[in-house]
Length: 65
Image (cartoon, rainbow, N blue to C red):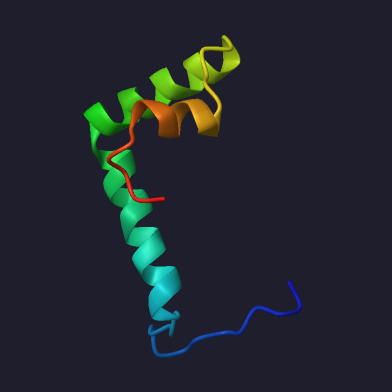
């Protein structure tokens, strides 16, 4: 751990963009419905239940390109 700085005051600076990502991850992990949706999506991918990007866009023409 050569690049780890020791902090004596109990305060650590983290770039805002990184911190926002950490908070989003924590929120997702705390939301059981969201986690179940993620698990289902992973199961779909593993089972081959996927469509191409072109097919997705054909089915959803109202979305911006």
